[in-house]
Length: 117
Length: 447
Image (cartoon, rainbow over all chains, first blue to last red; front, side, top):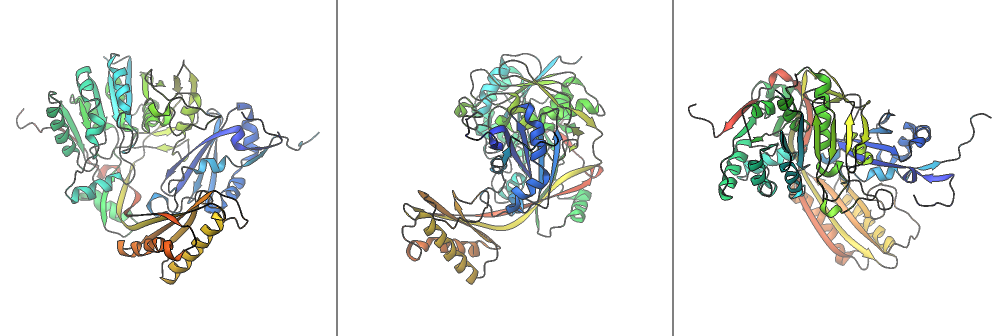
């Protein structure tokens, strides 16, 4: 993985891979840390609330996160995030296939403040 | 008497897939023994309605590229006993059989035993009434098809079909059918049906499980994308299977490629609804089983839903798109200026549904256009417009062309496209309303 100057300031892309799929106006993005040890870090930082914020430009009605520890990843489902989907969207990428990489642009902090000492 | 191991290859994950992808898979299967199948999945949500429109206009109702997909594999499949199962019948499964019969004749091959499946079309009868009740949209229907399950595929294979041609069948059922046929699984062996459905789910998008839709240079490198190996499953009687690909092909099958595909187009991973079973993916376990080999197990199943999903499609107006480029110093401000001009012109003309992007800047992630003077080497403006008629959409697109003379300096490379849209609406109908048939081709006059 490429060296980055500040290990406490990363993007999700440095730690994880993702794939987008669509069903009608619903977008799903799977997310998997390369290192299974990072699963907890992602679970803490890639929350539904943060996803709503990160995808605010698509105004999703709702974001649901499904945790899949056995598979080593997460599934995010964004309702009404595709401008109507391939049926009626005016977006260039009507399927939202590029949006997995928008997710991967999310900033992640490696050095988290300690919960307790 | 059941098989020990069943092999299923995939030759297409959508109608626009590489037509030569199946060839290496078939050559690999030909060197194996035991029950072997090739599936071709070629129907996306609206593909079938497009086929219906094409048929109404005198064109083929089946997959137009049928020859391109079959020609490279047909002879080897028929000679080696590799049976083909596909939904490439689309709106006219019988027509696809007729075309395959002609293709075999052209290629000097004996006529194969073919069986086609009907019953997914729910434009008539009791199912149609249920569709009309369930719909919320009001446009005139072009096509309505239920996602039927694996049962009629099994029936066709039991009849000895070398080629099974269907219309709308749930994608994973294309693989589940051959497994139920070969292993004799029961229709209430929910965990086995779930395992076979998972196998179909892994295969149905073709190379997406073997290195396609995956490469990210430096992080996820994939060898030889130009010659991607399409996938192959080796399935055991307990439903566990290995996903692999033919040797000597590009691509890769790794834990990462497979797990991405496990969740592809999935909503709730504990409840993936199909006509055959409700599939629970939460305990799916993947392990490496050699180079380009991943073992998949742990699918769990629950009783199938009482309803079937159907896709109702109606005409959805017109989509127009037009683009123009700006380059060099001040490219972004000139692109932004052009966008503002277009928005004013189209508002004055009364267009309600338009969208203007600058490709390379905000077309995908949809952020606000940057106001600072970013030094971009070039930007490409894109207009998208939805309209009720082709003429109205065209008039909007003409506004992009007129930017040549009336827009900012240095605008070039205008391209325009206009397509009629189909709108698909999923509805649920009672399973009992849908009756299916497996019919031999040509129909036997007297037995």
